[in-house]
Image (tube, rainbow, N blue to C red; front, side, top):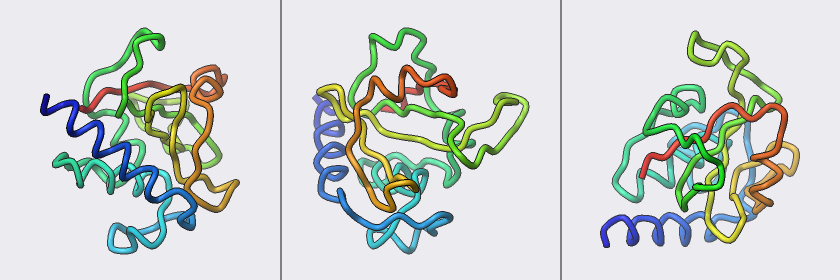
Length: 138
């Protein structure tokens, strides 16, 4: 019941911010006026009572790895290398972008190419050659 409420709140909040401007390196205090991918995720999770690190690379180490992509659930985070990869020993090929799964085959993310928060097809993320990891934090 608690998990379901958090998932519902996260999805509603994500959709509420569709169209908000993207800014690379957006600071937490700039939310909810503008976001980059990881500040968007940090903002969403903060509002459901979970504190995540600011940077996607650090967020990718949180929660549990979802090994079977067919078992993805609302709130799961999908990490790809993206355009600006950051590296550490856990992710030597880099992590540069994160999207949150909102159900119904969709993700919401702050997208640099779109210059705003957008909804996209989750399968496109899950089938990318630069997919790094799917993590479950909720």
